Image 1 (cartoon, rainbow, N blue to C red):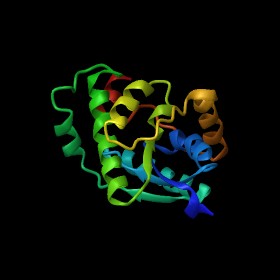
Image 2: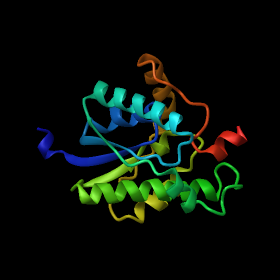
Image 3: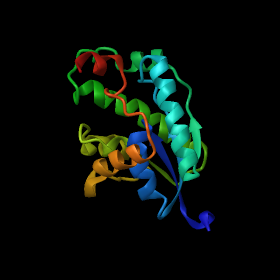
Length: 177
């Protein structure tokens, strides 16, 4: 039956942000997760978030692919925007970096479309994420914060005992908290 469903690649920033989008998408799509987060710092934080992404992939019985971790490449990408405030140009550059990597992976691996868990957060602009994602040509616009999506993600995170971090991921967001 899954073979008739649209194949969607879901870019995952972390397990708490992924649980609601997965729950929502699997109703009508064949979902595969893509953990691509070279922005996360330090590496130990990246690894911890990845371990919970694996846990949630197993819980929902979906495949999980992992992108290479290259924090230096990400730093080079956002160079000049390090001092931008949260929700500023640095975050937009970060969205570009991660969504471009997800789009490239999706294209190379014959997915019908891709989307991202980033829109579940009330701290991120879905409009800006849609603009960037739509530039790839086959982005699936899903605003997962609608219909209390963020709240549902918190409920599921508690139910599954997921690690909930206290900063977006990069050293610049951590310094501002």
